Length: 91
Image 1 (cartoon, rainbow, N blue to C red):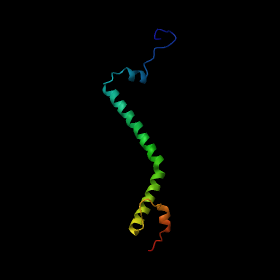
Image 2 (cartoon, one colour):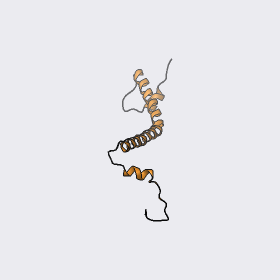
Image 3 (spheres, one colour):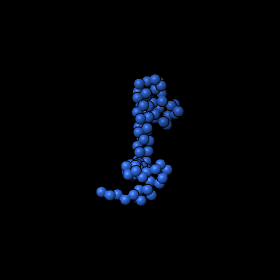
Image 4 (cartoon, one colour):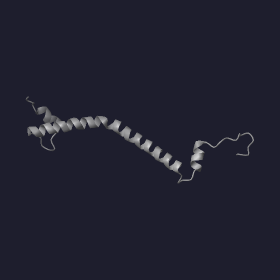
C-alpha cells in the first residue's frame, strides 16, 4: 500500500532488496554461498559434538582390540570387553 497516507515511505528492507536482486548478481551469489557455508558448518559442528562420546568409546575399543591382537587371543566376533577383562597384563 504505497499510496496509503498513514504509512510513511520507508526504504525497502534488506530481505526485499535481496529478493529484488537479479539471480545472477555477484552480491546475491556471495551472500547465498556464505549462508550455505555457515549452515553446513553448524550442522557438521553439531554432529561432531553429538558423536564425541561414541568416538571415545570406539577409540578405547580399538585400543583394546589391538592389545588383544598383539597378545594373540583376539578372535573376530568375540566380545572385546569380556576378552580384555579375562586378559591379565604382565609388565
